[in-house]
Length: 124
Image (cartoon, rainbow, N blue to C red):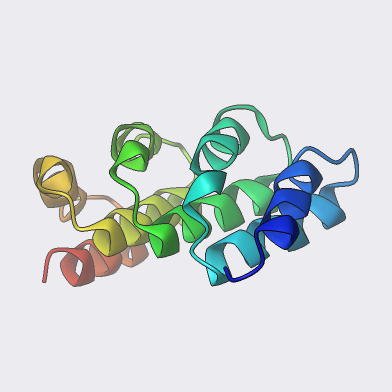
């Protein structure tokens, strides 16, 4: 991101009380591959109540590609929601860290076809 001040402002907005505003900031951080947002995005994965924002955070982490996200994303692969698992699989596939290979391999046996499909893509 060319303008550091804009990134700084977006980092602050990631903590906004309004989930819609947080969503836009999360998406912007992913679009700009802003690595300074990784810690905040990881906190969103851990604490965010808005499911959509958690999904956007996984997407952004995949776009940013920082290896710090690998272990938290692997942890999400056991989520009860198949779309959440698929989002984590997709993000891990984009990060392309060897630590995720075994976990992604197990996703090839997931009961949900969508998760299995995303795991096949991630392992290519």
